[in-house]
Length: 210
Length: 128
Image (cartoon, rainbow over all chains, first blue to last red; front, side):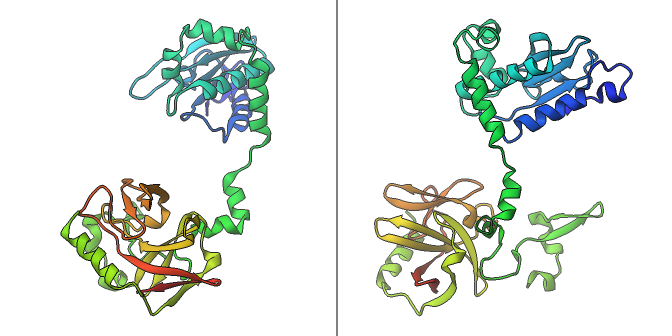
């Protein structure tokens, strides 16, 4: 999730992009999907958050939000396409719920939204029919599935820290307190980092024979 | 299969009675269908606990160092089964090692040391 500073801190901002990005981040965090998902919310048409290069891009208008989908940066850049305009907060989230769940249910393993969209028969118009006009009668189901994911979210790190069984897997040796004696560190820019194989001769013999 | 592996296998057949058994850790330290690592007299031993095999519950003890990457990560690999044989997939390059004899299924140059291991009540025992 990327956001510009929005109307709270910017004289150009027409909506609170930081607030909306927090809502979206918290709603979709932990979501399992065919590939990574990138989001951005820009607070005005100057587009400082570069939302048109994201899987889900939201750009503020003076009437609400414009939704862009299936953008990509990286090696094969693709501009996101304008999907719906001047949405209120509730409709924006409903469309994103439906869009993401439809993608998750139909995309191939490791297929980003941009490639999925290009392989989609009927293209953007078909996607609009399914998500906005509910041509397949799926909208309610997709929203319910997303709501279930949101309602059952838990932080897996916090969960592991509270569970002695899971913590067992984070010990180097189950029967000894020592760390892995074959891992060595060197200093770089005042910080430590793991040594490369070519640097191992620099490590004092006393330290090596731990 | 390389000469080295053939020798390893025949020596294992010549010594069907391993021992003496030494206590390594407790049953509670194991994670079912996955690996943990134990320190055994200067060696790093990856222990894989399979509670439901045809032979009942089994513990395999295999060298923790991945010869291809040089990192001590075999104990973090994923257990699988290839052609009726339990294997461990090395986490970095995904090559498979037999849990029975430590040979690499893709590369006859690579092999891992294996130890005899067993569950004795609540204890995990190993024989050098």
